[in-house]
Amino acid sequence: MSGVPQGTVLGPILFVLYINDLLSTINFSDGFSFADDTKLIGAIKGLPCVELLQEDLNSVIEWARNNNMELHEQKFEVVSYALNTSKTLRELPFYPANVEYRTPKGHKIAPQDTVRDLGVHVSGHRQWGPHIERTVQGARKMAAWTLSAFKDRSPTVMLTLYKSMVRPKLEYCCPVWNPTKVTEIQKLENVQRSFTNKISGCRELHYWERLKKLKLMSLQRRRERYCIIHVWKILQEEAPNDVGFTFKMHQRHGLKAEIPAVSKSAQLSVRSDYDSTFRVRAAQLFNLLPPELRSLTTLGSFKAGLGRFLEQYPDTPPVPGYTPQNDNSLLSWGRTHTMQLSRA
Image (cartoon, rainbow, N blue to C red; front, side, top):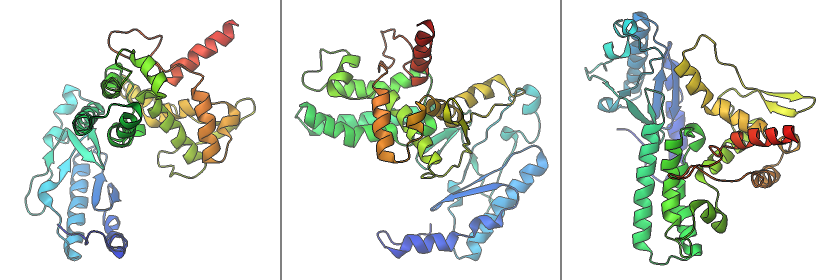
């Protein structure tokens, strides 16, 4: 309900300066802000933690009032991540379903299964299905509008429209939510598969053949490429290391990203989710590169070398009705290549 005039030069800078001390008011939780989007995160281990998180929320609202700002309290949301869903835990008073947070005005903060955080939908059950579903829906709508607005089906026009209008919707912030489930990979891939089927001269080709003819990568391969590039940027300090990457030089294998081990006492579902996170999979993908490629220090040369490296592996994403050799991940192709070398 507060803001700055759109299009001004000093507006965003003055706004950041104005709210820069907002998070200094909290004592218990971790606070994060991006422009006018702020969230508080706290580990709830008992009723005192619930009260402390409520106090931090009240402190943020009080800060806004003291600075002549008004927060839209009816739009506040809360999402909870329960690592244990046993019956015993569900009966405890601090279990998410039994806790109610309120604003000083008395507005109850609505608990949500899924919330939108900077364009990415995160869910309380630690799955990316809801975000992928919305991503696919948005891309299909854009593809339908593009195909209805332009009659030309030549490869040049169609690929230009696809790369500028449709594909960006399928790849926004994809290193964060990069799926490993075949069904989710297929949902995303089907958008590109359907669009390229409308291109002149491609209707009779199988999707894998179409990718080769149009010189396109599968969306799955592009997501893994983005993950690798981001790890390289973290290594070269061109991107913030906000997930705690560490690198170690090995005498035989060169510089490699360290992969932290998950606690053996963690639940099976937690360990499975952890193995699929960017922190783990991106490090594994980066370590798959040859040592001389990982040691490059300029982005242009690294991308060029990465492109040549990716050309070594087939790009056969999962397609309904076909049985590929593997799940098409670079990690799977890398294991196959290693096995072949061992046999040789």
